[in-house]
Image 1 (cartoon, rainbow, N blue to C red):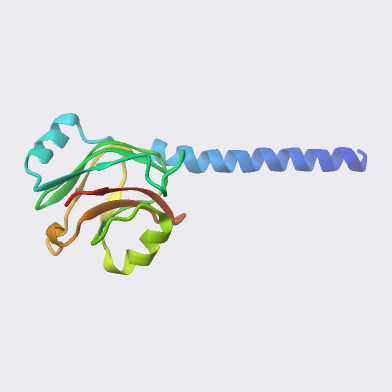
Image 2 (cartoon, rainbow, N blue to C red; image 1 turned 120 degrees about the vertical axis):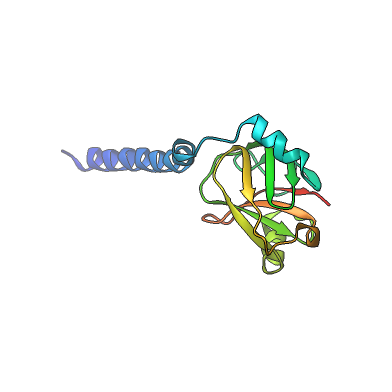
Length: 158
């Protein structure tokens, strides 16, 4: 085997390996996600909510791979989402005292935010609200990818 052929094989296999790795990061969370809550569960929880807001795709920090779209409902014991999120790993739900719409703004306020819990589904979710958290002390729900430090979306609910 000549040197050019060996380099070509290494390069082509390396590119395929990188593409496979990136595709795996995107697809794996979809494959291991638990079943999403039903529309009935979401609507029942939404009826008991004290606040509501809207996730939009057009926020400054959202892009084609990091977005959320739908309604969020904040009640006394849980936060409910009816809509869709771009799939990804390690999503966390935070409550923020101020509206944020980018990674930079999130990082500046993260110390003043409270992490509510994990978001494990990408169409609808129900996240229990810890008894120690008063959602009236905050104004905004934020979905953040902890592993990659990526802003996904935010909704001002109050």
